[in-house]
Length: 87
Image 1 (cartoon, rainbow, N blue to C red):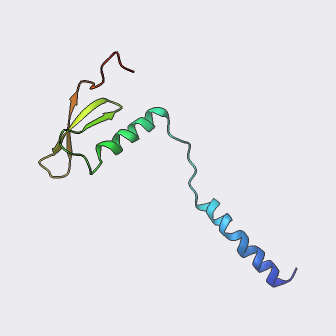
Image 2 (cartoon, helix red, strand yellow; image 1 turned 90 degrees about the vertical axis):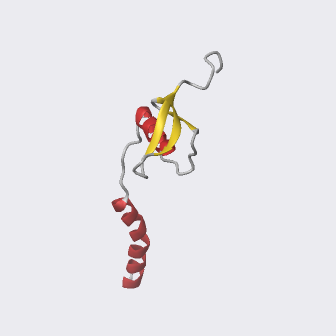
């Protein structure tokens, strides 16, 4: 094998080796953690309007608007809008 061929093989193998070294491997979230993450994403949605209802892992919440600090979103717990007999 010539030096040029060895260099080509090394360069071709480098990207996959670099990806394996940099990739962070972690186990997927549990069902409860996935629910919490989804609720956080829904509650921090910039498209929320006053009166919008968000289904979270803690129940249904109605968006009241932005708090006095201008940053925090305020929510109010509400009863389930889905009738009990309906599935």
